Image 1 (tube, rainbow, N blue to C red):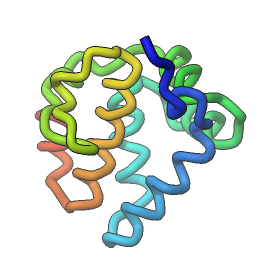
Image 2 (tube, helix red, strand yellow):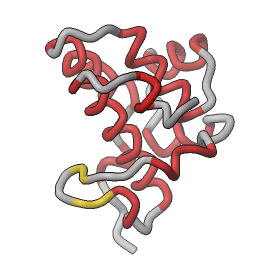
Image 3 (cartoon, rainbow, N blue to C red):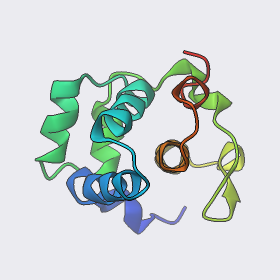
Image 4 (cartoon, rainbow, N blue to C red):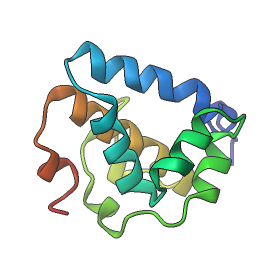
Length: 117
């Protein structure tokens, strides 16, 4: 299986891009952090630590306590691919995260983004 370059990107390099995207659309860091903690099971302190470390996305998800059980309810297209059809578990988690960030930026209701949680 081909190793994707995105696996080795740092969370610290991705987070500012996510933040800029949601803020550009009139949303907040708190909304972004809420969906990221919901997805990963990380607390706010651990999320902040990941933002200032050289942790890769692979390490970020490996160190996350647990993927939210409702993450499998995340569906739709990101980068032209249906997230529910992605076979590589790590790539699917990364694309789940991308999808949630897109939903925050689009102004979707938080209860919908968090799949009823």
